[in-house]
Amino acid sequence: MSDEQEYLRLASADNFRDVAGSGYATVDGGKVRTGVFYRSNDLRLSEVDSAALHAIGLNAVIDLRSPTEIALHPDPEVPGAENLHFDAIGISMDRLSGLTDRAEAVALMDEVYRGFVVEQRCRTAFGGVLRQLATGGPQLFHCSQGKDRTGWVAALLLHVAGVDDPTIESDYLLTNARSAASRARVATEIEKHGGPDLVAVYEPTLVVDVEYLGAAWAAVEEHYGDRSTYLRDGLDLDEDTLTRLRGLLRDS
Image 1 (tube, helix red, strand yellow):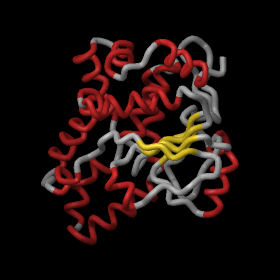
Image 2 (cartoon, one colour):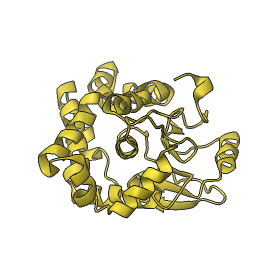
Image 3 (cartoon, helix red, strand yellow):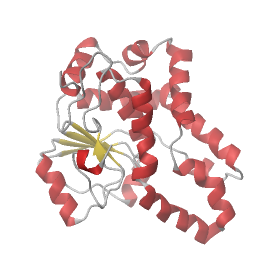
């Protein structure tokens, strides 16, 4: 996807993008509608980018972060947009601070993604987010880095829209390219406090990997049998909500 095809980019939120990309194709020959749902990392916005968000006409900014994360960097007020909070439980800071090698970090990330599916608090949060999104766009959802909690919501939306798994995975992996600058800043802080070896230990927690997304899909299969049952029983989404979401997501 070229920069010219991007619906909108924000310099101060490098992982901000349209969930639809430039209009992803669906398996039945349709495409995903742009300008409806947006995803991002945290919103420490410049004046120019704040004005750009206002110009979109957002009706809601959905924050997936924990209260602790929010206290550090509260969302700005975007005129016309309601600020909403669904705590989707990200990476445990206690677990994160105790990592000693890369394999342990990868295992933690797999556990986080399985938790998106099996933890009741996560299911409550993600179900609430999708019900809110079904009320209509344009809306923005985000977490701290815009990669894990945000990435799972985006993957679910694209699946509901009828996008195939390779495209969902490709969109998910865009985070690694889009967030290079903000990831480098985090890596610099880690190196400052623990040296380059610690950066190597933490690197799996700073990126997205198809293995992580696969861990969540595998948990869906294990606990619910298929994705439709997960959406219905795990996230408590009725058919009316899913129909509204598809109508919002699909251009045809």
